[in-house]
Image (cartoon, rainbow, N blue to C red; front, side, top):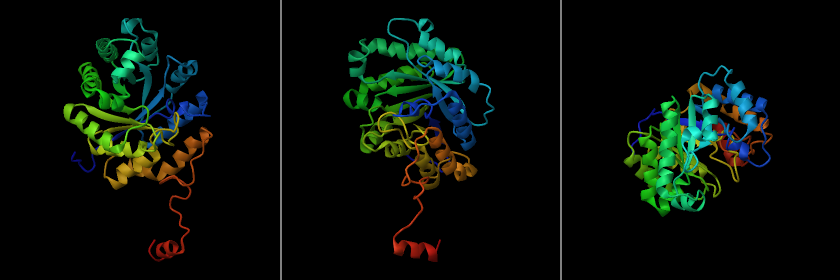
Length: 316
């Protein structure tokens, strides 16, 4: 995929939802409000604020966050497709997404046939209806809907035709973006490149996103190669924490996309705030950033080797 220098890549931060699923992390409502303000100051495009249908604490947060003055962030409520064999308007989780009163909603749905038949215990056709019905219902009510295709890369590897059918159902229903999820974090960059390229070619008129997990340490790399192949939305968490081995480390992905690849990601003046804000979010989570993390770690620009120190001293 040929990229245009200065082309926009949107950042979708999931610290308050996926990040909160990390071991040892528990945010108070006040913690969440502070993090939203920090991410807004950085210039993040979307903040996934939580799942109002599964957590009573999130309901209180959605009420309070609506009063925050935000300049950059669009808040997103997170939830699943409707349950099988009922209408969206009768599903309590769908109702809670409307009650949250956010401008955008992220809907996750199965895109791996195995997960549909063996986990949801429904048919492949009913799953397509669940995706389409849910998104259409929310779009009709004025929501900007992002479809998170759960287990997409596994599904595409096993049954590419069905995985693409799931994306088509979402696109036909009016989804604003199709987000390809490496839910198990087990995909190699070479396969992510191949699959993302196929999706970008099949859906040239809709925004493609990537949501990576770091189980085999490729969340950042998979995010980068997905952008190279046409993705224009990257999901992750600013300080990298999340379920199991974490999510894409946005404090590394953002400067790589902007400084190394020439994309427009956050306001240029915000790059100077990246280290401070990333560490502030990590401090709120009581999960400090390791000293050797790229870009924002304490040792990221330090040298110990004598020849390196000498070279930097002569030409900083």
